[in-house]
Length: 164
Image (cartoon, rainbow, N blue to C red; front, side):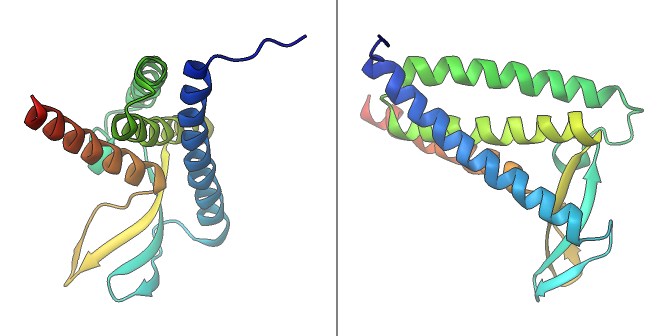
């Protein structure tokens, strides 16, 4: 007979489920971008948004993109270590909703970009925001999830400090 899972595990598993949903959305959108877009050729969507396929071997804002290849494995390892630590934190703090939501978003983004680095040697970016000739660096759903997760972590910390 199967053991009934504890409430702690079930709740942490639900946060992992949220991360999995975001990860699936990230990977599907990247596959669509790879299938329908040509590299570095913008496809206009709105006056401020293009779909533009870009392969980023570096980190955020193409940091270390010209480093010679070692950065692929460095950022892959960093993403894996971060994912393991985040999973630990989710099991330990699953009852904290904002914190766990933030961690789930960051986890999904980290794993999504690790998958890209392993599969393609670079992160697949395709969202190109621009205004008056100025372009924000291309990004993807994983990057958005990480950014939103960091914002939620800051909000959670500010709320925690204000309660003290």
